[in-house]
Length: 252
Image 1 (cartoon, rainbow, N blue to C red):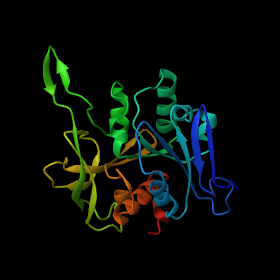
Image 2: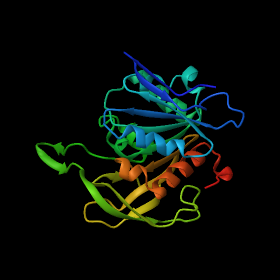
Image 3: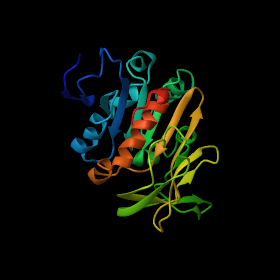
Image 4: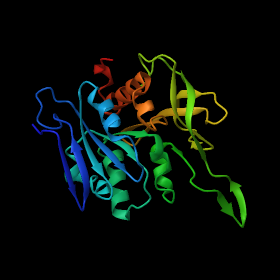
């Protein structure tokens, strides 16, 4: 069994919780990908520590995109994206697609990862949406304005399908979090969470399948105020269980 540790080097920093591997209860092994955006580290990982049956390991960019080879992917069941980066090689793209489409690893995408890989259209298909970091310009004209964000908003989160495995057991709740607006949501996803707020897009959580992979996106989770919200933690926990195809074993 691994003990909690931090490794710092040229490849980046990795942190593990104490039960990432070789645990008798066989927890769901979660790879948390970070980098490219600051966050409240202690409070963020404390949220995952509170989730029963979850064993997590962090990997930071630039090393993170080497985690999708067949050998590396054998060590986890679900990827949680909490990064915001643009650099990725063609080989890393193909590995990421394969680990989801063919291997069926689960994917839970959180908050600012919606803005990653602006120049990679397939990433938008994988996540089910896109935050535009800049205006889209064609022939010298803005055809689509960039997305916007506003910190410290009180958001009334509405559960759209209480019977869905990701929202099961979660009631409507209020959270103090960052709002995104003007982002795209694919017509092919299942909307799960809705917010009615002048500074926030209406659909803030969804799910879909990408090949053999189950994929969930949750817009919430900017800082420690958001991480500590019980609704947020329950949704992320349920999303991990669902992505790992263990939602029938959920114990909120």
